[in-house]
Amino acid sequence: MLKEQRALRRKANRSPVGAAPGTLTAHPHAEPTELNLTLVGNGRSEFHENVAFDLVAKRRGEFPLVWLDCVGLGDVELIERVGKLFGLHRLALEDAVNTGQRPKADFYDAHGFVVLSMIDEIKSGRVEQISLAFGKNFVVTFQERKGDPFEPVRHRIKRNSPICERGGDYLAYTLIDAIVDSYFPVVENMGDLIDKMEDAVFAERGGDRRIKELHMLRRGVSGVKRSLWPLRDAMAGLTRAESPLVTTETKLYFNDTLDHAIRLIEMVETYRDMLTGLIEIDISMAQARTNDVISFLTIISSIFIPLTFVAGIWGMNFDPKASPYNMPELETYYGYPLALLFMAALGGGIFAYFKWRKWL
Image 1 (spheres, helix red, strand yellow):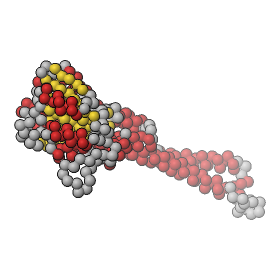
Image 2 (cartoon, rainbow, N blue to C red):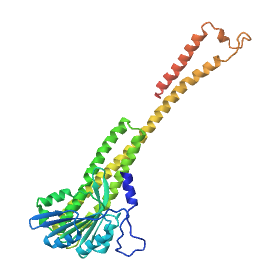
Image 3 (cartoon, rainbow, N blue to C red):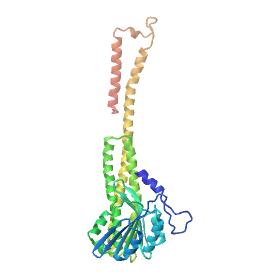
Image 4 (cartoon, rainbow, N blue to C red):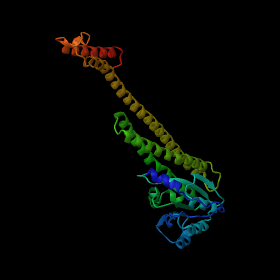
């Protein structure tokens, strides 16, 4: 999963070098653009999937609030037509099509524009760029591909919640809040994995595979942190916005979303510190195990080196009958058991000395 996300970041779409501002260039592998239309107001709501642009243009004025979801960024001509219909700035459209943008919040004369990183698949934590343009009576979202955390928002619209009675800024808030909250299951799942890894580290399970998993998990946490830091800045920009497009009441809700983003960042930083600590502990424990083995081998060697020396001396092939100086001990009646007893006493004495010095 992480490898796929890094590959997607490397392949993020960019305008050609030297291109004029506002140039729209589709990525070669971008998915075809589909339009999903949500009409809200007058005590009712309508949902239309994969509609033609002409239907959007025709029905836009029939409802007080319109949400157009553009899924896929492959059809730049269609995206340009959408931009003209809602009066979106060319620079905003360029940022929407050119993925890999840093999360931010900009305000133009006719609309606000927000770029965020969205988790479109909670189970795997797959991330994509999403852009939102909103005005007094519309919201236009641009997604790279199908999949989003907006289903609770759609259900609230169906139940005729307060979303249906407010403007585009509040609808934009509910969508942004859903994006931010989609990080919580992913971050909490990382916390559960860290707890399991902590148990594995202290139980000394997994070996080399555990080290690899710790590094991969820390890389994933760092990736989420890279997404959340600029997201927090974007939320702060919305709460401080001096624009008639965002009401004072909606700023309070944006501030609540900012609190969620800050909480997520604190959780991620805590998890990253925990992982760093676990990696250091695991390395220290591995070094301690190595030192224990080396100490054990050193002690065994220290005990058996003198015994090997004794056995080597009496194992030399000298004939005591040829000379009285040629190892007369070999003719001792109890020489073999006495030699064994001497070596046992020597080894036991060395062992007792190690215990006395508390080396064992």
